[in-house]
Image 1 (tube, rainbow, N blue to C red):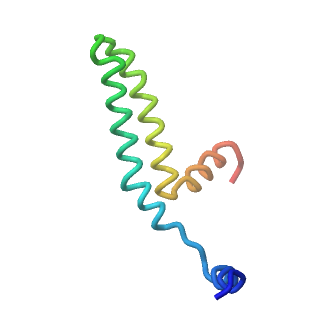
Image 2: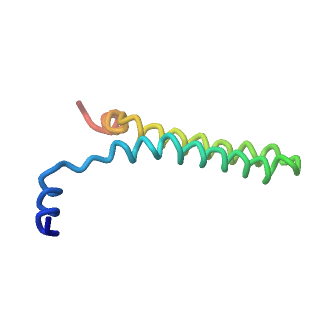
Length: 89
């Protein structure tokens, strides 16, 4: 099998990224969340800066909400709802 035949066979098929997406959701996201939690504890927990930890935690919650919208696929519906607030239906 030549390289050109291989490229033609690959070009005929459909490239899917479902497995990569699942791997990222199952492995990378929990590791990032664990790292963020440890970082929050290290930065403010030991110093008694509870207000600073809560401010950072609010940012993490917003980031998680954005990730949740991106992963669930309802981002389009939310965007249409926000656009509907400024336009006439």
